[in-house]
Every structure is written in structure tokens, then in C-alpha cells.
Length: 273
Image 1 (cartoon, rainbow, N blue to C red):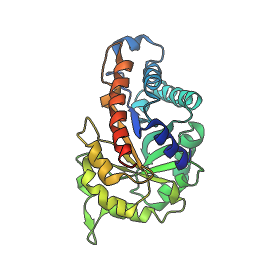
Image 2 (image 1 turned 120 degrees about the horizontal axis):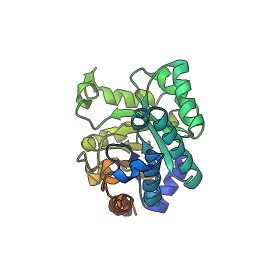
Image 3 (image 1 turned 135 degrees about the vertical axis):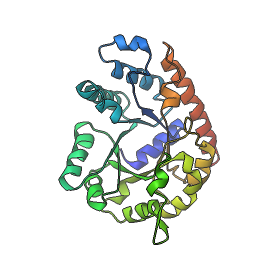
Image 4 (image 1 turned 30 degrees about the horizontal axis):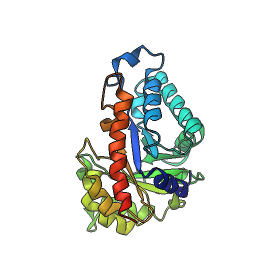
């Protein structure tokens, strides 16, 4: 998917919502555990109930790898279902991979070619040769971890070297990579006050923003400091939507929560007009 196609979907749906599919068998409704593929059936129900309110889905790969072959099969079925039935949806493999040379190329082939995701999250710690292999795939996007929403982000990401925070160095240097036009960045909603300076470094790049909702991030603040003329934001919500109910109405309740966020996003989009 091209960036222009993603922007078009945002305007069409009046939403820049990304729904995280962090599917945990210990949290999904108990009656689904009787299904042959409980993970896929849960994902399918969430997708069918919310696809018109969001522009992206983000399976966290760890939640599938944890269940071995069963989980990987459910992930494959989920992405195939999305690509076949809702091809306008932007798909994110939240894999946080990061290795060098041929290894990165193999990761890229696994998620971009075999599973046919539109994008993947990458840890940039190993530098250029761990990132550039992902950037060579046409109409595929690499989402670098820049400034995350977890407490441990302050261990390294905001530390200064030569009087410059590490996350700013990541942003600056990554723009020099071959294929950098395919880069997006993870910036946590709980770090909204940093967005103004981030936009000075990457003024037009899309930012994937977790942390709105359960982690306490403010949608209004993120939009005030991070939105561009082409929106430039994907706001992720996972637990607040998919686990809003553990009863048979779980999909309908997920839709209600997604609708609340979509309506709030529409208000922010209206401010651009």
C-alpha cells in the first residue's frame, strides 16, 4: 500500500485508528475456546465488527509465536482474511525485528512476501545495515522504534550523546538511509510533549502512536503536536477495544469502543478544514 492510498482511506473513513490484535487465549471470551481455531475466530469477529472504523490492524507477533504452529497458522489466516476481504486496510506486523544483512532480508521476505503485510516494526539499535534491507521492498513500510511509551524508554532513548538525545539521533540518521521514504516511526502517546521536536526532524513521516487509552495517552495532545497536513498519524488501541467485553457481545462492544475513538478522530480531522 502506498502512503497516498493510506491517506485516502483516512479521509474516507474519517479515522486514523489502528487496532492492535494482541490476541491472548487467557483473555478472549471463554466460549471461543471451543472453536477449532480460537485465535482466528476472535480476530475475524473483531475485524468484521470494526473494519469500517479503522484504517489499520496491528497483530503483535509475540502473541502468535507464543502458541507455536497453532499461533503462526492463526496469524497467517488472519492476514489472508484481511487482504482478501478488506484490502484497503493497512496491515502492520508488530514484530520489532532487528538484525543485520541476510538475516534482515529474510525477515523482510517472511513478513512482506510470504505473509504479505504492508509494514513491520523494527528495532534500529544495530544501525543502517539492519534497516535498509526492509526499505528495498516497493510499497512496503518500515516502522522504526523511535520514542516508545514504556517506562524503560528513559533508560536509553532520551539519554544524550554530544548533547543530543538518542531518539533524535535515530530519527536524523535514519532519514539518510537508502529507501528512507518508506520509513515510519513509533512514538508513544505518553510522550506527546516530545512530538513538536520530533516533527522538526521528520516533518512528513507517518507516526505509529501507541499508548492512547489504557496507557493514559491523550488523543488531543498527540494531534495538536503531531498531526500534519496529510494527517501523518496512526493511533493504536489494543486492549481498550478488543477486550472491552469477555462475553458473547465482545465484537459489538469492541465496535462501540472503536466508534468512540473514530468519532474523536473525526473531530480532530475537522480542525484541519
